[in-house]
Length: 94
Image (cartoon, rainbow, N blue to C red):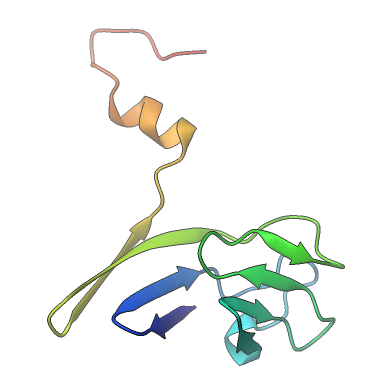
């Protein structure tokens, strides 16, 4: 789900982590989206659960707007950063 907020953009997974509801059809208010099926609310900035019934966050993505181009990529988390900085001749971190 891609959402424009002024000159910035937000992107999170469009499927509710509770029972698969369509977040892209939900209401957006105060930088949060509410699932139209059961009312779970997620923060657009990071996909975290504001209130349930959902207990798991939805994926969040980095958004970069350059002119008329929008670039979206997965957010770098601790696991992704470890793999990104891994050298081929070193064992993977535990």
